[in-house]
Amino acid sequence: MHLTTLDWLIVVLSIVVSFVPAILLMRRAGSSTAEFFTSGRAAPWWLIGVSMVATTFSTDTPNLVTNLVREHGVANNWAWWSFLLTVMLTVFFYARLWRRSGVLTDLEFYELRYAGRPARVVRGFRAVYLGLFFNCVIMASVNLAAAKIANVMLGWPMGKTLLICALLNVAFAATSGLWGVLVTDFIQFGVAMTGSFAAAWFALKQPEVGGISGLLSRIDPAMLNLLPDFTDWGLTLSVLVIPLTVQWWSVWYPGAEPGGGSYIAQRMLAARSERDAMAGTLLFNIAHYALRSWPWIIVALASLLVYPDLADIATSFPHVDRSLIGHDMAYPAMLKFLPVGWLGLMVAGLLSAYISTISTHLNWGTSYLVHDLYRRFIREGASEAHYVLVGRLVTALLMAVAAAITYVLDSARESFQLLLSIGAGTGLLYLLRWFWWRVNAWSEISAMLSSFLLAVGFLVLQKSGASIPAHVQLLLSVGITTVVWVGVTLTTPPTDRPTLVRFYRLVRPAGRGWAPVQHDAGGEGSPDSLPMALLGWVMGCAFVYSALFGAGSFLYGRTPQGLLFLGVALASGWGLWKLLPALWSGAGRAA
Image (cartoon, rainbow, N blue to C red; front, top):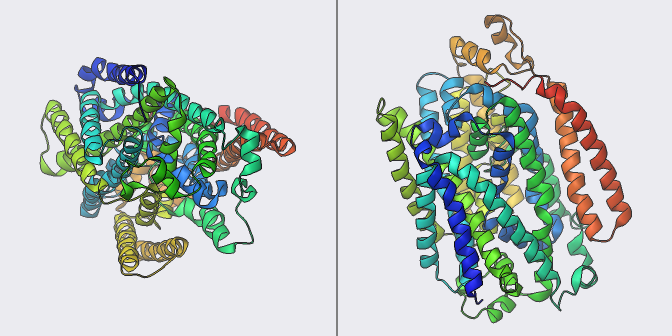
């Protein structure tokens, strides 16, 4: 693709605008680790909500959606649509609890909830496991998508792309801290979404597609279905049944962690109040699922008409590295049809999406390695300026490691499955540890080890030629890991009573799971209502799913179906509007 001077000016302007907040907030970010990692706990709900959406909107996200659609149709997106159940649970059950805890990172939670050496082991191990290994795998998958896009659009080899992107991200993330990330995310999300809608618009205008009516008449109708073909039970099981019955609550996946975690927890901890934490996470759910899906899906469907086979992509882009070609590359391949100016805006949007995601992961991973490992176990009592400096150096290290791992991955789909397999089976533990006093540090250790060893075992079997379906691996991992950690929980001593009492008084979780501890804590009850939270979760899921499928139904020209979904969206939205004030009354205080 040929970028004109106008296109490059738009790209450069986008970079300059993105760096302005980083420069303006550099001094504030460097004043303390609280400012650098949690923005001084003063972020409003709309800023943290948009930042969550911007972070999960990366260069690999449209590639992954395209990969899913081209393989098994629109219904294949249930692989990630099912996670709405998880994150909506975070809104109504866990956002307030995180904000009340007052921790700087979600790993600090472990020494708040548990006690003794096991708690320290969990915190230190997860700082390395998540902050270094897991985090760098995520960044590598984002790097891979960026490399594929740059290879198609600019003809750049992977090494050149990684070098330029690394310099941009390290300069940004090491300078701005979380405040700069939040403000820049807000700007970059607008640019990225504009580019997404433009890509869908011009994809539909191609002669092979013939507009939305041509797309609907020329594409295989089965590819348009919102639900999989129930005559293909194997596909239905892996795409719909397991994600909705098992995967959503059992798998730890970045951005959709059961009970909240990683950069979602970081944003909630950065909120200025419990109410802001809840509202921001609710905004994230609405924008993440209902707003962003269809522009990507339209481009993916159009690509099936323009590039029916992978060989068509190779023929259209003879300069592209053959090792990079996969179904996920169809998305950047469709961008060749963007006219002058719009192409520059799309490159700027993809770059914005990339920077917002990588900068968040750099800040998040650095917070673990500096606050939860270096400060806690290696050098305590140093100045705030020292820890901020170490954080900036670690930022560069993480980017280098992620760049190296990028060369190992092949596709967005492969990366998605790898992350799912590593976190399989731990989700129920992360849900229950807030509401059941009996969960202890050994529960966490056994769950992590079991899940990781099973993921490695399945990977070795696959590399040796064994063929085990992904959904079978998931079910086995969830079942075995759950049995392991529950058994360990019931056969090891509980956390000491003073630690449990202190945690309960601070966080005040609702329900009967803390009844034995509540008595020792003076009988003070929780301000939260589990039935009201459950009602909010049901209505929130109904609102987002009906908005998502209603938009699709209207795009498909299925007006009666669209009106039905619209009615559900209006009813559930009205119910949320009436319910939220009652929930706010228990969440309006800053922790």
